[in-house]
Amino acid sequence: MAIEDEIINISDLDIGTEILQTDKLLIETNSGTKLLDFKDFVIGIDNISFYHLISARGDVSDVVDTETIAGHTGGNFELLTTGTALDHKPNYEDLKGTIDLTKRNNEGLIQFASVSAAITQNTGDIQNILSTLSRIQNSLETESFADLEVGKTIAVSVLESYKSNNEFVGNGELYLNGQATLKIIDNVQGTEPSTELITVAPKLTTDTEAGTSKSVNFKVSNILSHTVNNSTAGIPFNRIDIDPAKSNFMSIFDNSPFTITYPSDASYASALILFDVYLKIFVPTGADTASLIPVHITKGSSGSAEGIIREAYGTKKGDNLIFDFSLIDTVHPGETISIKYGINGAHILPLSYFTGIRQF
Image 1 (cartoon, rainbow, N blue to C red):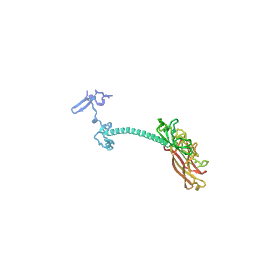
Image 2 (cartoon, rainbow, N blue to C red):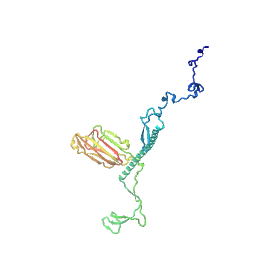
Image 3 (cartoon, rainbow, N blue to C red):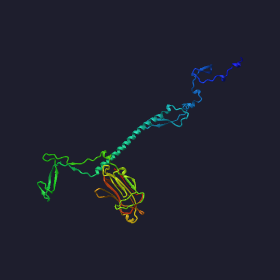
Image 4 (tube, one colour):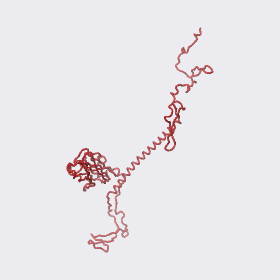
């Protein structure tokens, strides 16, 4: 057999489908050609040409640039900047500043949430205090009476007494239709006088009243000219910007001519109301004398006469009169507020308005 017939080329070998740990690799070393079990074949970064594609980035020897951020409560944070090489592989020391800062910010958010909740609570408490203060102020400013207790006694002595004809009585006796000066004393024949002679009703300042008392806020205006044409001289408005029924449905309200009656039940407590008026009025005839006619804001209640609480005169601007004024007044339950101008046929021009907003 010729030698050529014994030659076997690699291309003539059978093709394998897998490599097992017990399979062998043929390697050439400095000490000769050897066989190597596949299980002993080690792959490392030195014999992988695409290591940079499967690793994080480069190695730790690339350029590293950081900046220092000072903490509010002491301590600094070292953070990587854009000056750091893109191929630098960050380690824990590089990221420690970012991690610590994130932790600190998270703690700050928790504390901020706690402070925000406290602020919200404090805001609510302040509103409750202001509401209670308003009720105390209303109670002090409202006229009250002390009732004498039926059946109670009081000890007095007679200092001076007179008959009906003003004749002085020396023996201290009291006469019908006569006058006398009395002095309160400690007791009469050992009987202690009553200490409950006069009773003053307590003023409610708890949230029981606050829960039911509501504001009665309103704003009306004119977007079109509207004419005073009624016997009461009430000023008409054709637009309702703030409906008082939205804040207290027990109020009675009419915008043309304007009048509002505040609730007489427990849904409204006496309050200071800020009234703001801007009126632009055109009077077809007699505009010169019309400036002598004031606008009146009136207040009254059922069974009592209506009274003027503010009188204001206009300023002539061309053919129109301008009324621009404000006032604060206490409005009690059941009282009615009206605004009037005494020239029938006067035109209430656009941009005119009337507001009433509760202050306390």
